[in-house]
Image 1: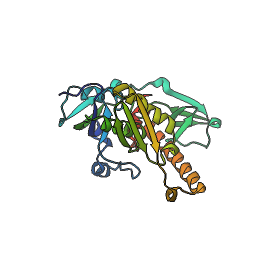
Image 2: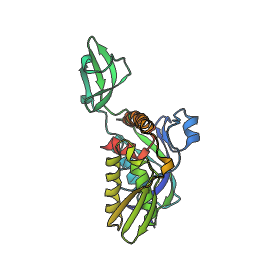
Image 3: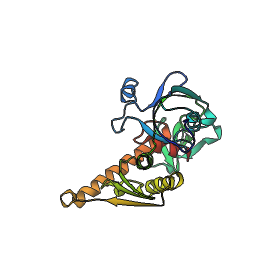
Length: 263
């Protein structure tokens, strides 16, 4: 049966620019070969809910109607990728609004916008707030590895898409019991990630209730100071990953990255 909207599939892909520059991949070997390897990223196949915007629009649309085992490529124009380049998103900012003295090429955050410093004129910086891939045509080479059919498998896939965490799932009628890792609720943006996953479970599956279980054993409980240090580290990493997503670079959770990019 052909892939349709709402189906949950497992895919691998490599994304390139028209000149052949590799900008994203699920393949660790390819990432190393083209110099975009990130040791913090978990390489391997990813899950996608077709039509849900887990990947850019042009890629998402191309998945429909394909079969499991399909191998091919799709050319995604800017309007179905990261948008056309908008000169109006070039802005002049007072250096006093920035945390540190900027240099040309620096990534800076101004309010809720992140951009690249293009020029510095006296005490003002010209910042480009366009997405780095705005105006670019993208080419995705991909393979559809699996269509997830069972309810428990779909729930596991949904949690992986929206939280980046592996979970154990047991389904009892229309109730799902989801056991999450013991650090799940400490990860940055855990409440938002959890709600995103739950919304898709209720939207796409015949499930009326989800019970989230977090198990701890006495000998596994960490010291409080260790927890604080670990969460500070994760918060820093999350900030870095978000900024990389906005630059179109590799991030730990690709699906989450696509979601960030498309708002």
